[in-house]
Image (cartoon, rainbow, N blue to C red):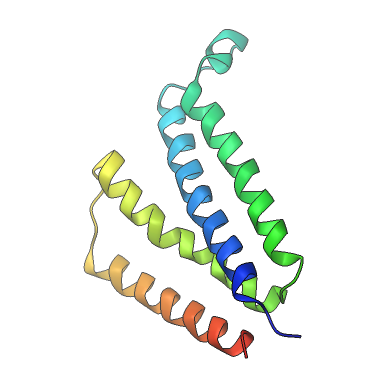
Length: 118
């Protein structure tokens, strides 16, 4: 079985949405209070949860016609996006070690994608 490019694109798109969702959850966690009114009005937390639900839709759609062994590692593309969002939204430091680690992840994802799309 080969994995179509459309399945890979769906999973990667879902990963990007999931990385936004993680940023939403972090932003919402800063204002987190454990009472109904505060939870119901914490739009960042709600958006993060909805973002994860939407990313799951794209992930499942991608799995429908592709190989799990090729597609699941592509979820790690979201790590790259998360690094960018953490810098932009939360002013977190991007270190050489983080960039190097993400480069290795991306190289692995590319190799798996190439091997699965033949």
